[in-house]
Image (cartoon, rainbow, N blue to C red; front, top):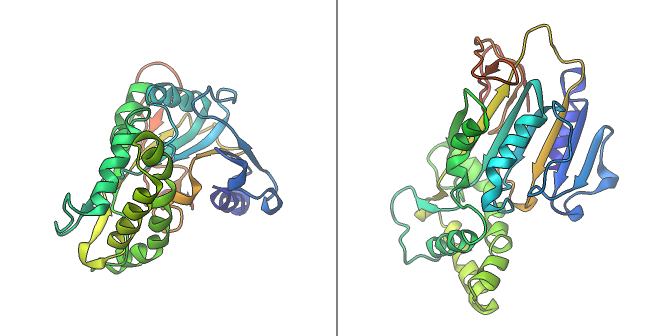
Length: 295
């Protein structure tokens, strides 16, 4: 989270002048390494957001599904919409942890598939493990329009014939190794009753399989739901502010690989649907012609 916020603030006059970063723990960032106009805080996203309405130009919510309560999502979406200014937009990135094999060699007998099944079963007691697949529906239900969803493959190691995906897998391998342990310790031992020995054995086997190029493993791709809120052209930015909501920073797989491009303005016509917050236009996750990107 801190690296992303610093990047946004380093873009000069075309970048972002003020960033509010929210995380689950103060140990996930170092205040001594902060930059000017970056405000980091700790908060509980299951509680109402403590921001005024029409406050942010951009809200980037990513990998919070492991912390958001099952019955919180609809309210969370509505509050994000409330906090957005005209000409602002929201991007959400979540991971579906259902591990799959690109060549079909990963079976139910593999430890990595067992890890996925156990994690999804444990988290379903209090959270919603299907949240990554429902972001678009929830955003529309909250009042967003022209919502775009994109599925992004994420190899767990360097196995792809595509050079770009191969490089992503190589860079991602250490992240996968870390999250297989950090994400699962509490749900496996406390919610499913595994012993610590059973936990370590399963995680070690899952790590070995995730790092095996022959299995061609990747989770069900990440789904990005992206929404841009726009009003009249005369209401241009005089100050850009952003909020970054993040949980489990050790699992932030997307920020290092160039998947995300923050598009601020578009050329397509906007259309208003219903009452409320102005004309709504669609943005893109990747770079596109006629749009100024900050990434």
